[in-house]
Image 1 (tube, rainbow, N blue to C red):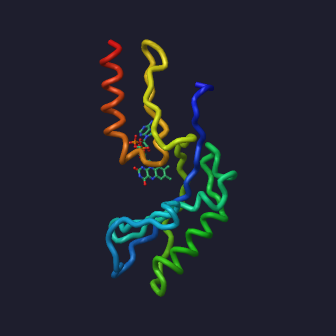
Image 2: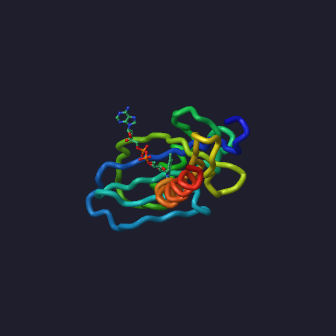
Length: 142
Ligand SMILES: Cc1cc2nc3c(=O)[nH]c(=O)nc-3n(C[C@H](O)[C@H](O)[C@H](O)COP(=O)(O)OP(=O)(O)OC[C@H]3O[C@@H](n4cnc5c(N)ncnc54)[C@H](O)[C@@H]3O)c2cc1C
């Protein structure tokens, strides 16, 4: 689909080992949402930092970016868990899809081919609504 307005955006993520007496629960973000973290099963899941190097992270290569991973670790230590010892269990990278606008693409590409994609890193939040729109589009055409 060469004419589709879509570019990859890689996201760096890490998760700690369980932290005894972790003092918060919930889901948080900062720096316009470029960094996000939450407690899960007594661990901290922390991701983001794509805005530190948009060019390097505009890729479909599933690789760690050491500069951004170091930045995440430093922010975890200084902003989220100051004074609390922690260990990182796993680090990884995932690929999201972005375009010139935030709206997903929901479109008929031919009589039989339909697409719903480009969730701008909000696939969990948007997927059920986008799926409903896609089903509507398919039933209109058939
Ligand atoms: C870095 C990053 C941050 C994100 N942040 C957010 C966010 O804050 N909010 C939000 O709403 N969305 C976010 N998303 C998007 C969200 O993660 C995805 O939209 C969502 O996970 C897609 O769900 P899925 O079930 O379709 O696929 P996945 O969650 O990818 O699940 C597919 C599963 O299938 C497994 N699998 C694949 N192939 C095989 C096989 N052959 N056999 C067996 N198993 C297989 C995979 O291992 C995986 O567990 C983010 C994505 C990334 C990459």
